[in-house]
Image 1 (cartoon, rainbow, N blue to C red):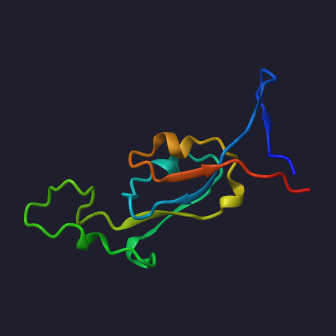
Image 2 (image 1 turned 60 degrees about the vertical axis):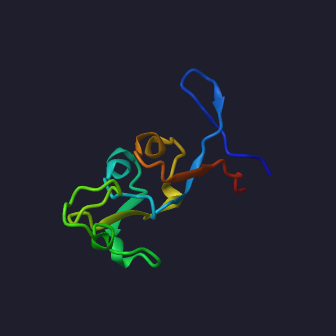
Length: 111
């Protein structure tokens, strides 16, 4: 089987890399990938609803409210894959993510 390829407007062939997973442990729920995605591939969900993740409050256990873990008491969301099959492999999500949470891979064409 062959890898999925695309063609640019200029006629050059390229291989898109599709989103495979999000490292939700690193995700800060900023929503940048959600905003930049043209295909509604992502969804913000409550951090405490994701199995294996602690609520954001558990990350911010000091009295200062300003630490380097990227979480605050107001952060309660994390990004998830809503419909990975709608991904077009543009990679915009990976380029805009401040925490580099995304894994992308080329895919084999389905006949």
